[in-house]
Image 1 (spheres, one colour):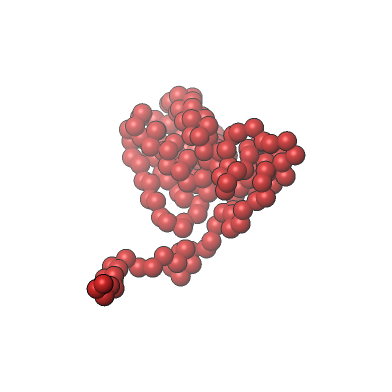
Image 2 (cartoon, rainbow, N blue to C red; image 1 turned 120 degrees about the vertical axis):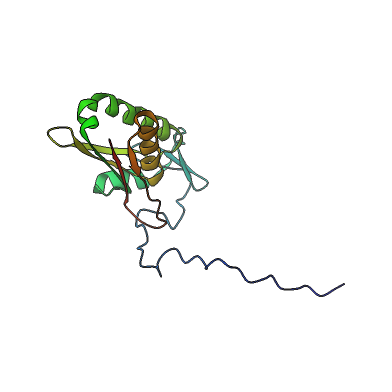
Length: 169
């Protein structure tokens, strides 16, 4: 048998969970697994094999608050979507309906990705929409952009929380 040659050096930097780059670890990200069966006492999501789902919790499941409900309780969003512009004021109800519809679709498949709050200003020309996850934030922002156009700034910075996305028209 021939001698094995070592793998060539990687041109990608080693992943260090963002801590060396000055990012802080997300305190809502679970670093451990819960005992099974487990369920969230707030939303009734169930925890199985390291994942949260909307499956019916097993009888006698242990109670552990899911990360989404913890964020909602603490009012600490993982994502913020800032909406602005004259179009928003003139089409506020239509935009609100699209946000809620898109959130329901995302939440049905991803229990940890939820809309937290919509906070418009008095004139409805600006609003802050908060989410429990970054994927939901991006999903709703993309749906707004596809439906209504406008400008979308959606930087996806690894390890950055909260994610801040801007949509204006």
